[in-house]
Image (cartoon, rainbow, N blue to C red; front, side, top):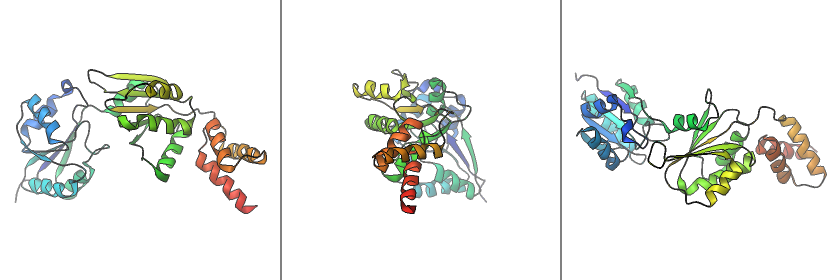
Length: 279
């Protein structure tokens, strides 16, 4: 029977190749095969560390089939490394399905830790990170997007988001619409790279700042926690009902009160509708 294979889940530099660790260098040099999200970017990494293993692609579109190929190599007792473009596989990147499958088949799975845009941005934001929430990329539309934005409003921990450059303003405006323009954010761009930049301030100011620029590079956004002295949901609903009594529509009342208090717009609106049904 073949010896049990080893899957090395490897964190790679998020921009600066100088962050390659000795363990990552060893992993790339000893792996029989490297499965990579982007083989071209991984070729640059391999050249940097002086390694020349066989490289196969494994990305979102082919993970289901390629993971079976990877498992077959593990079944032969091979050492296989799994990498993505930057950071840790499985964290807003492909890899989770492969890791689960390898473990289910009885193979050893271990990680080579390394740089993280999430923790780097948190450290640079200065909002505190004893507890935090990682949201990855916001949904682009629909109810799921609304629910995630509503959750950010009342979150008492920093929230970390990945944002593509062409959606930076769209996402900032959506967050500001939910939290109000005074919530602080840190916008980290091109972390660890030559043109690294960290902008910190109120989200309303951030929108004006970035509306006058062409966003370039990779962005990690940290939204500061909401205040801890918010009014209760019941108080917010009561305030919204008073606005309705003065002539506002339920949707407008919910939006105004949510913006002023930090209470979820959706929870206020649904309570208002429920109250109308009972009346």
